[in-house]
Image (cartoon, rainbow over all chains, first blue to last red; front, side, top):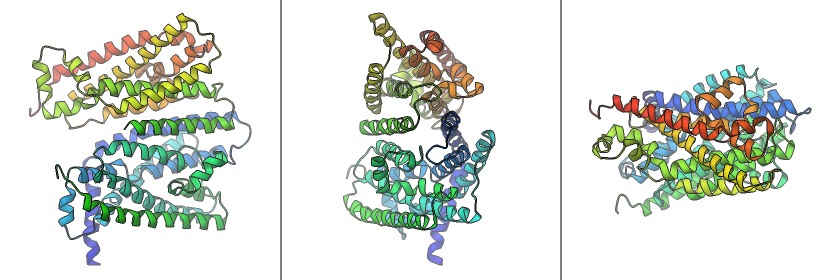
Length: 267
Length: 235
């Protein structure tokens, strides 16, 4: 197991860095709360104003959906993405090239290190919001919770795979912030973070189905609520796994091409 | 950056549009009214970054000591901070936001007279002024927080999330927050009520220019108080 120890220590350091900058972390999280609270009020108005369940969701289920979405979006914040692309942009990647370890694996360790902290903080915040808004639907079956945790893990892998690929564009472009913002916007709409995909008209749902994003929010959230039957759940989780592996492999491919294109601060 | 602003707004529009495919109104507010609020938030954000991006860099200027230069020049440090940088990403927000506003106006039930059009221009200008004043006021936190970047402006900026939707959906506490404490409601909600001639809220919409003056006075005051504390970096 010796060869994995270096990655474990990278992950631990990354977590410690998050602790050092905890004020920034807390304010960042508080900032996303306004967004979550606004969404809660918006959906509350919509649900209380319509007599029937919308899109097959009851209001307690919708609340749970919104919080699962918040929880998953809180994992692996933009710091990971930002640092990765800045390392490339500012040339620190050169040091990484000289190190006896895999670049992608080391970045994965950096990105996953703070996840336990992010997860527990988001859980606390989510619990407070849930209490204020009168509770949420809990998984009907403990099995749903287990499947959900596995699905959430795959969702985080997909996120890493995607973020890694996007960061790689810093090899070719100097302005990464625009790409990051665009990625988040597309992801928010097609992952189901803003609105459950069942609300979409058919053509939009068809687009979402062939993209990797639905595995980031929609699939785990629906497993939490037990909204899909057994075979569908199995199929959706397989699709998640394929995207996770596919994106991580794509990242390796892009990396291989990218180091050849590397031009650091003037060639 | 130009392109990403367009993507963000299209995604935002898709979200609102999808909701209104299911229900006719939210608390009595129609789709185009909500789109108008949304668009006003983005246009004013764009104005803030295209012309006054400097507010976002104040904490860095203070931290690195570059702010000292501004104090010895014969021009108000506030003007220098505001004009310190240009954020081209703002252009994308302004253009797509304006497109949405124009489409929204074409969907209003009211009769457009020259006087009303003039009022529209005044309202949008006031909304943008309020936004820049909020940016400047929160950026002044840099004088208290001695770090390379301050999260306070971003935190206050996030309050704008509330103003993307009609304030009638919120509890009184949230309403007080965005009407009185940080007047984001005057950036989007009240101007929209006026533009669409919503009787119950139009009158308050006319207060927008006054709120703009109030916000500027408050922001300048905050900046001056902070400036008196300023003791250059390294102290």
